[in-house]
Length: 574
Ligand code: CA
Image (cartoon, rainbow, N blue to C red; front, side):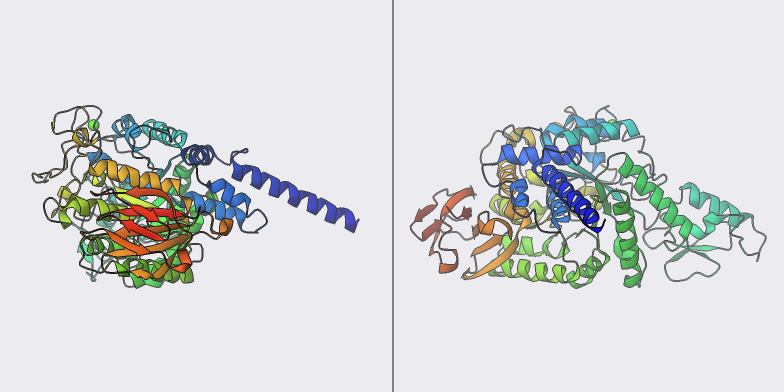
């Protein structure tokens, strides 16, 4: 009897391994999007594919979670639907407009075309809202009518999945709009109470969805026509949800289930440091609750959090088990990427900063996936960080972002070197398809946006120019997606190759005994650099890819390698 049991158990284990292996190699679909993605990797690249790396690890117990994590290491395009593409002429971008330009983001043909080659999409909030930016939601289970319908979203999801792209939705649940029915019900009830009378939960549970009080505590604003106040840290029209209330958590679980059921691949969590003001531990607990709630529904759901704080503060949120946190230390005008590209910081520090953060994040969540980004909708655009004409710096900065490990995010329009600074509205300007603001698809931009003088051409001008910012960044994305270790490996410093404006570092993946490891050489200086490869990387003489901002004369003679000014070389073992 006992032997039969063991035999049955072994048989089941072998079948499970076989199924997992077939899924990994793409013969058995786990989900439509994963299969397409792996096919894409195979046909796109002559290099080792992600699925092959995994088959080498088939005996390791963590294989399924490793596979999932590999699927998270993408290149994700952040889109503000409002300003991306207008399909019906009202000046407001919408989902059918976005769908009509999906070929620009990823045309489904990994081998060719003029698309950006993005493998993921982050949509800023698409739920009904009274503001243009839609971070104050009135219905978490709908699509804003200006953007389209649920059916439009279904069509977009299907088209993205066909192309091997994942789609994550922005989920702002720190607060709602005052126009949300929950708040409206609560406010009406409190106004109906005789002076001094306590609220009764059975009469109106929605009062407990928010933080109401008779005293005006710090961060509270008055509820008009009542003796009550409510917490609204961001804006009076954005009342903070009471995330401790069981009913609120049930509502949010329903929201998460609703979108995962519709095929959304995950969420971007807005403002996680604000979940519990001045109580980061409670915020980390709630982040864990959201992450676990999503993964209970779909184990391969992806969650990335916006914890806009210093690195040591946001790193702590990895203790929640969340997959990713936006890597603010590298982003923005004063971040490591722009300082490196601007030569305000030594390039020598770049690899050290990556190694340090990889160790920090891994110590808090061993299966973390970094979420590097260069700019987003709350920051001045990258082209604003440099002097006029410094296109090379615009290019190199985005390349530095794209060669970081994890899931790298690119804000729409950065691939064109769009401008926009100061007001938030300026940072969210219409996608620069064309110089003619009335050309098909062009959006009007948010009210209050100032006139923005672009320095670099529209897509129409850049598309066929081999030296354009657009074509440089397309190539950077292609390299990232073609050399799996770039997004999936860990950084190893090479101290002999760390200089003020020249650096070399290794991106290593534990699989395949280093066969897919990549040596990256970057020269941000004004003159070519020739260096002898140190012993630790002496074999990395096989030039796999290059990014040039001007001079294209790279040279490899035995162990002597020349990197032209403004050049980035990607080398592997033969
Ligand atoms: Ca429209």
